[in-house]
Amino acid sequence: MPLKAGEEGFSLLEVIIILSILAMFAAMAVPLAGRLEARGRERETERLLTTVREAMLGPRGALDAGGRRVLAGYAGDLGGLPPLRRSVWNDSVKRWEWDIPFASEQEANAFWASGMGQPQYLWLAPPDAVRWQGPYLPEPRDEFPANAEHLRWTFGGQLTDAQFTANREIEMRQTAGRLADAWGRSLLFFYVTPGEAGTELFQGTATVQTTVYVVSEGQDLRSSWPAYRLDTPENEDNLVLVITPQEWHDEARQVETRRLLQTAADALVGRFGPVDRLGRGLLGGFVGDHGRWPELLVWQDGQVPWRQVTGRWEQNAEGDPVWVPPTAADLLDGAVYGQPRGLWTRDTDGNGTADLPLPPDPAAAGSVLLGFGWRGEYLPPPEGSGASELLRDAWGMPLTFRLSHAADAEPPPEQTLKIISAGQDGVMATADDLLEIVPRHFDVRRHPPAVPPENVFTVAGRVVNETGQNRFFRVRLHASPATQPATLVQMVYGRLTVDGQIYGNAWDFSLQVQRSSAGARLLELVELRDYDPRPLYHDWRFLRRWDWTTVFVGSGGTATPEREPLVLRARDVYP
Image 1 (cartoon, rainbow, N blue to C red):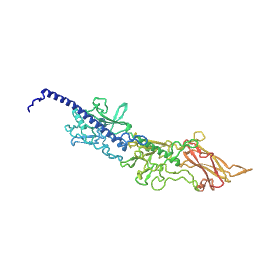
Image 2: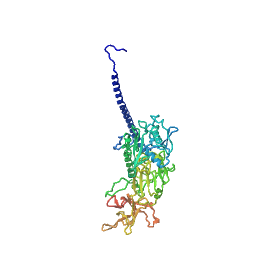
Image 3: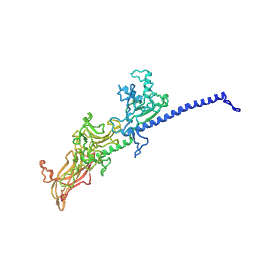
Image 4: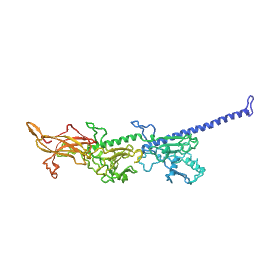
C-alpha cells in the first residue's frame, strides 16, 4: 500500500535491530524454560520420594501417647522394610519378569549393588503375609512408553560397552511396574549394611543395621556407582532419599513389647523388688503360688486341645501356630516350647475341666494344708479362642516361651524360661528378637559340703502344748510340691505343774531344709490321731492340724517367719 504524506516505514536497519532483540529474548527464554522445567521435575521427583518413604514407614511425626515414634505403612503392618525384588526384562514380549533366580552368589551381589531391585510389595500383596494391609502405592505405570523403542536388548554374558549401555538404558527407561522419577527413569534402591573394615554390603532384604538409599539420577539422566554418593561429578544432581536404621525401627512397638515381656515375667515370679519385713526378696506370681514353672502347652490337631510337646513354635501363612520337630539344640537340653496357659486359666488343656487346684481352705476340717494352688489370673486372658488364644507381642505375633532342660527329672540350676518376641521382622532367631530370661532362682538347693554341718537353711521356732496331754506333734514345712514336706516329730508333754509352775510343755524345734522353692511357704503343726510309730500304720486321713503360719523362703536360702517370735500352739480345744 502506498505511503501517505507524512508517513514513514521501517528501515532495513530497524528491522534487523528488532529481530536481533527478539532473538536475544528467545535465547534467554529457552534456557530459562529449560531450568523451570528441570526444577518442576525435581520437585515432582522429591514429592515421589516422600511418597515412597510414607508408603514404607508412614507419615513423619506420628507419635504415641508416650512421645515415641509410631510406624505406619508397610513397616508398621509387617514390622520391617519391603524386600527388593529382582526383575529381568523379556525383550520378546516387552515386559518385566520377576523373581528370576540368580545363577550364583556373585550375580546376586552384583544385582543388589546395581540398585535395580524394586520394592514391589508396596503395591503387590506378598503370597504369605497375612499382616499386609496394602497397597501402599498405586502400581507404577510407564509415563514415557516410547522412550526406549529405539533400543534393543542383547542377551549373553560377554557384552560390548555399547550393548551393556543399551541394556542398562532399557532397564532405566522401561518403567511399567517399576517406580520411576519425573524424567521417566527407574528409581534406584540400595539396602546397605556396614561390612568389615568399613566396607559396604548390599542385599535385597533389610537387617537391623540397614540404611536405605532411594536415588533419582536427576536432570543429566546418568550416575556413577554407587549412585547415592554425591561427591562425584555425575552424581552431583542426583536426588537421594536416605532412611536410617533408627527411622525404620519400630521404637514404640519395641517399648510396648518389652513391657509385655516384663509383665509376663512378673506374672511368672512376681515383680522384682518386693521384700519381706526384714528386707529379703520375695517370690510371687505363679511360681510363688505353685512352687514350679507353669506347663508350656500347644494346640495339637484339635485333640485334647492343648498339651505339652517337645518342639519349636512357628507360624504358617494364615498366622496360626504350627509346631515343628525339635532342633538339635532343643534335643540337647530337652527344651520345650509353648504358652503358659496356667497364667490365666485353671483349665490349661481346654477340655472344660480345671487342671490346677485351688489352695486348700485352712478352715476346712481334715484338709491337708499344702499351701500350693492357683490364686486367680496372673495375666488377663488373651483375646482369641482355640489355637489363637495366645499371648502376643505389640506386632500381634505370638510370644514364644522356651523352657530349657524341661525333660530332666532333676533340672539343673541353670534352667531358664525364656520369653521371646520375634521382633519387628516377625522372624525368630534374627537380630531384632526381644528376649526376657527368667532364671530358676526360685529353686533353693542346698547340698551337704565335705565337712559337716550340712549346708542347709533352718526354720527355728517353738511348739507350745496347751492341751494338757502328751502328744506326738509334727512340724511340717511344705517347701516344694515336688518333694515331701520337711518334717520333724517330737513328743511334747502336757501340763506338768510343780508348785503351780508349768514345765516341759514346750518344744524348741530347729527344722533343717535342703530343698525348697522360694516363696511364701506354709509351716503347720499337725498330729496323727491314734499315732502308731510304725510307718506302715500311718493313716494321713486322721491328720489333725493344730496351728499353721507362713514362712518366707528367699532364693538365697533364708527363712523369715511371718510372725515373730515363731510359736505354734496346740490349745485346749481343737480348732
